Image (cartoon, rainbow, N blue to C red):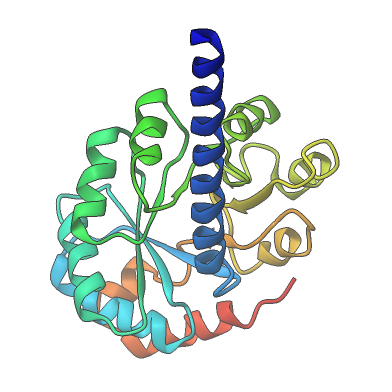
Amino acid sequence: MAAGREYCTRTISIVLRGAAMNSKTEKLLSVLKLQPVVPVLVVDDAASAVPLARALVAGGLKAIEITLRTPAALEAVRRVANEVEGAVAGAGTILNAAQFDQAVAAGAQFIVSPGSTPDLLDAAALSAVPLLPGAATASEAMVLREHGYEVLKFFPAEQAGGAAYLKALSSPLAGTLFCPTGGISLANARDYLTLPNVVCVGGSWVAPKELVAREDWAGITRLAAEAAALKG
């Protein structure tokens, strides 16, 4: 009887975890399907994050990934989440559980990591905020699939084999969708967006440092509109 109860408890736990993952997958897809390109930002000054995000949203790019590569990043996430109407603030370059929790506390609505670790996946499992974990190989993708992840970041895309490699994964890893990031530009974005297993791409070209430095928000809006018009 004890063994039977243990089996039932374990089965219920698995079912509940699966339901939670399905909900988070749907939530993540609703964000990634907003646009063909997710801007990947490195923000040096939190004060510039708000006008930058407004410029991107005005151009049609609502989902925005702010990478945790600078001391200003968490404050930038917080300000974009609270002050920019229409923006969906995400946090990227999340490397561990502590950063995951900090980003969620700052208001991030989705989390992006270049890879995955057991601790990071444990933190994500306890949160309602969806994680887009990174994978560069079939084996890494398979491990994440075992944890219930159906949508992955393919990183670093160009260096890991590019569109041809990702196309080769579409049959053996059927049902897995990717957001390629790393080396993506306006020139090669369509190569990825035409693939059946690509939901969107991530790119930094829509917010060049030189335009941000001179506060050319109109120029960034033009680049965002150009990216938003890309179709697979």
